Image (cartoon, rainbow, N blue to C red; front, side, top):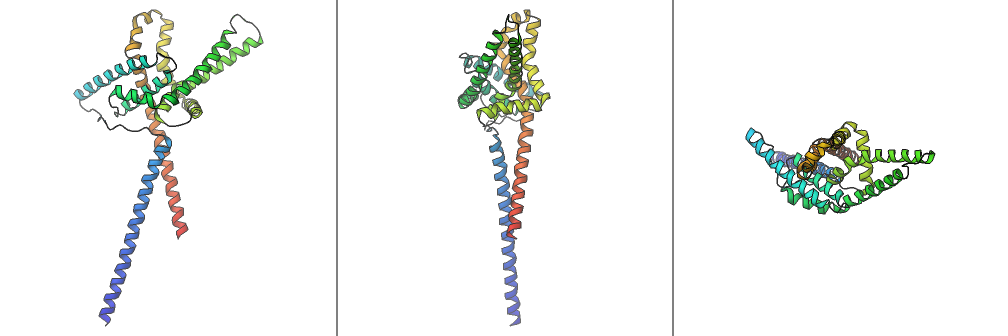
Length: 284
């Protein structure tokens, strides 16, 4: 009789232990699912761009690096021609820059697909958002030009005020335009948030802003100082200049985006852990 009682007690204890282990496994699974869910939500919320299926491994050997360089050079040549063609209507320049950055940012990560197809895809998908931002900048630039034109040959306080307004307006554009189209290419946001965030990033990260700004203004400054250079090198703008500048600026921008997304994902995961801890305390 005692043996039967001991066997029954043993089965009861084993059953309780198994139940406890199962609940722990379920709880662990729940936490892991929550972690994955919050990680995914963090990236989606912060607008991380979709990755292409055509992942290109980073080349290691000298031969692989050479062919990879040739591939990228060919892609940049195609992208530059597409940029020139799609920018002809002028009001599409914003969408053209966004499509260019969409591809070059992926080229930096070796996640680009076929350059032509990717460019057309992103040109269409970002057309509305990029065109809104570009038209706002275009109207703003036209107003600044009008103010400046009305000060030519005019002396007085009103003219001086207009010059100050024009200078301040150009400064705002200088801090916004280098970053706004990469933001549209990478993230989902509202029109005014794109403009505001572009300015905030450039002002808070002056080193990043200066590298991008320098790459874009270096050649125009050289043309201003040496006008003859434009005569000998103008065709490079049609062949590769714009796409090459976008690619080299994308290298710096992508490093910043990675840090931004990692910090955001970390914050989301920490908040998820805090919520799970508070739920456990509530249950206890």
